[in-house]
Image 1 (tube, rainbow, N blue to C red):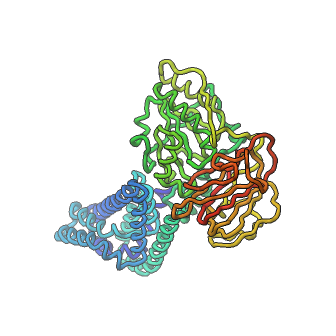
Image 2 (image 1 turned 180 degrees about the horizontal axis):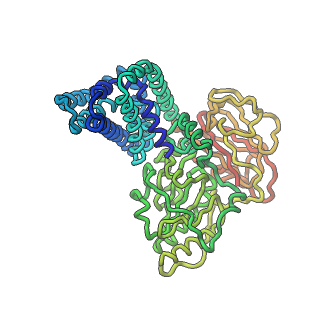
Image 3 (image 1 turned 30 degrees about the vertical axis):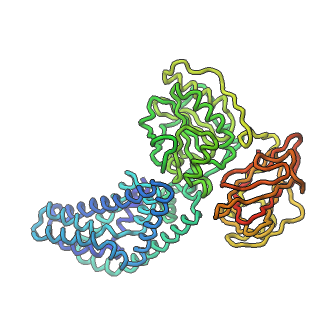
Length: 589
């Protein structure tokens, strides 16, 4: 609702923008004529035509994005072009010349009769809408950009219509008050021109950030990705809440405090209706699914991402439930919401699903629309819906598998399924999917990008977005980490710029994992792992040989250490024998 209000106010402010100038002659030509028969039909035609043309542009951009990751790049090109038109009025004039010509011809035909006829005025309003459609104020630009990158929807159309209605309102006031308002408007045009150009520059900067992958995770940290910081600030003032209260903070397994708050089976309450799944940019293993088609089915929605260790350890159970209860009415839907930029690649997700043996439907939620529809905050997160499409139970993080399976059985019986299978599944998880030994885990998930880096030593030497030389201290305290050699530390990853670069971490856990990716050229990167300065031997992980050797071949989570016996504080180091590797995050188990 607040976004509709903001869009409306943005339209009202359009009256101080230079792009309103082509509209003014048509509006003020109706001065002195009956407003209901002349002015109002003109403004209605103008608003409806503008909203229609802008919606078609947004839908077209959305279709381009839906194609695949290459479509997203094409959409970015169009958004960059849109930003250039805001910076360069002459370019905008050339690109929009066909619309302006059509509007002029239509207005000439409709304006031949100067009598106050509603039909003729509405037709002139349609022409005026065509003339005005290329115009974009700051909030409108954000709306169209969000629609192009995320896909258009009814909500987008409503926002565009609210924007158009706001502009029509301000013009109606100007029409009723007459020439004095027109004179004041002309004096304020300059400020609107600077706003227009500022938005153009901001949009081009945004395109660059998205192209470089700097936008990863940001979409999930604000309530609506199509709004900018200005709108968030306005929303805060109007609602008295900060933008962070939108409930979009991402986190992995929330730990025991959150698990203690989970509901347990019994008299399962109704937590709400099953939210829409329409925000997915693509579906794998299935045609697109919608909530209406799921009526009569028990639904398990699993939010995951393929490099998340907590998600990987829950997959054996989710897959087993999908197989065991499929014929009894259970539909399992995975919602893949990426954390890192490389997880946006549908090709990467498809390969990971094949390697993991996932054959149930998976929605690619690159724009976090489904994530926000559920008001979700965690990976993994499981939501259980009954046959009436109502959420009846949820669980965040790992564990409580027995309780979750009993919920499935109870909801299937409520749905009238015959012969619901009794008993609970057992799994034989291996490798990274083996359940953690939480009694021994004393090391937290640790990010290597400067945006979320903690416990890096020496802390003052971390240089953002610049190749720098690093030297680790001789000793590390528990959970401290450091770099050695040439590294470029970005917002979400650290990239080795030369061979013989190392990462050192003092940890306490049975397992150590590291999310890694090869260089930009895709060439494999060899590495050597040491524990307390020696080859890992029997403590090697599934991606490491006993002598500590291994190779980074793709962007994913690598298990580098798995210990047996007593667990103590150990010093882990990994040396990359080739340049170009990117390291994202440590996780433990």
